[in-house]
Length: 295
Image (cartoon, rainbow, N blue to C red):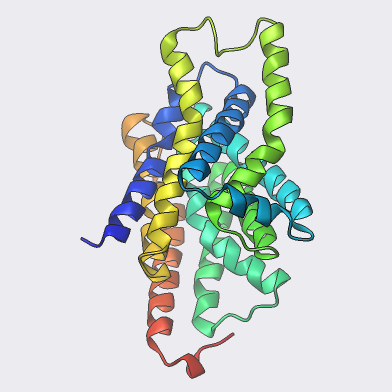
């Protein structure tokens, strides 16, 4: 098997089992989990850059004009995404969080049209329309808007849109973004510890290991993904990206027994059909001569 595929599988498998990791910390308030993830991610990501001898590239990246504004905005969107996901998982909405990452690619396509004036090929409008139908159907059958899924999809969609204004390799961008959030997160954890409500110390060594490990489980899949992106085509990454939300969905239904009614099956099936059409259309388009593709 291609080494790049192995790296990509490793990254998506790790992201796929995230619900189990966050569930192990369900007694810790979500904001504290997020803050620990930010603080320890900074340490692990910087160690990663030191190991790869890439600290100089990080300094060069932040010196680019306008980069700081992009980093701060991206950091806010990433914090919203991470917090919503952690809260959703531990509140018993793993299935709905997986829906957010299923529809995210289609949300990104829509944002390209709305904000970057990209033009879709005629067949690309079909999955976008189907996704809208699926979300509308789920809203009707839920009796409420699936806001967790939508917050996850749109926060990550806007995150990607912001980063397109100043492209930067994943490990550099996430390092800068977590550094931007580092001091607020550290101050919050220090305050909670002072109040006697911090969870790093006094709650057992296993809790301490898991909280510190939030940095590692953030940095390691990013490293694997970065190495995969250098070795395999984006088409392969595009297909493999559905592995993580599929695993999360199955974990929610099969391990944590979240309800999955016939109505939800119909709604999810509409969205899954949209993703199949979107993926197949992209594969077929890439096989055509460049001159025949839309812009």
